[in-house]
Image (tube, rainbow, N blue to C red; front, side, top):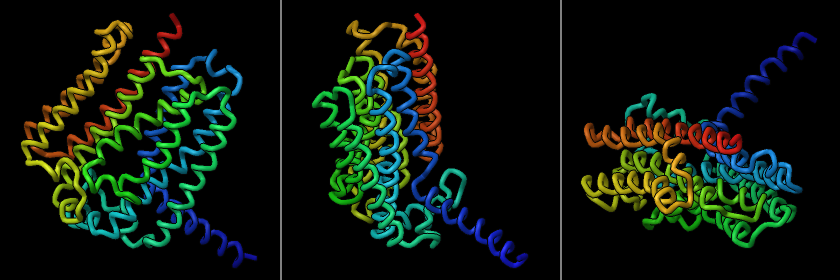
Length: 322
């Protein structure tokens, strides 16, 4: 009896360790960041919107499928990176620091095989497709545009570095901006069938938040990506050209806040509520120009993104209360 108990005790840590490998494979912390889009959607809808017939069903089904799609995106990206050697060059060939931990890549450490990851990625994508199909079918009155955006999000998001490998043809930044924005816009559209300017603006801000994390990450990975044939903007341009591109993205990000306000489509309080976020975003770019080091800028980009979410949620809740 004691031997059996000891065997069970030994099996449990092994199972947890195995699950931990897959959690690191899908970059679970970043997956959780993407789920913040649903928190923003909930505050945009408010109690009345959430209580509308079918709204919670559509959001719930989308949320369940979202885990599969995001897991597939992260997993298949690592599969491609392991196959073409770009991850080995970008991670194994660099210092193992807190800003660039090798443990984040279980395919490189040998904890998982490429085959295991590939099968897992396909299963996750199938899971996401199943639940998103249910979300579309059971949504109360989804607009055609919302169905199209959901379908494109399902098919294009994984094509970043797998399948069509769009990031290898200079389209990675566009795919990432669309995909991250759609993770907010699509569920709102399925729940309501509408797309107000405020929702579009918040969706684009969410998208730029993720893009300006990836932009600095790509800057750090320039040499490894170039060797593997991944044509990011950092690869296609000079260091000065890439810095200008990141500056243009920073400006465009802030214009998403200012243009709707200037056009009178959104209250000026929207810009006021986002001042903390704007300060972090500008600090990110200024720091990169000063040091030329992309990894601290990437880390600050994560803080800027999370600051953005806090600002948007606070603005939406105050708007509901007034």
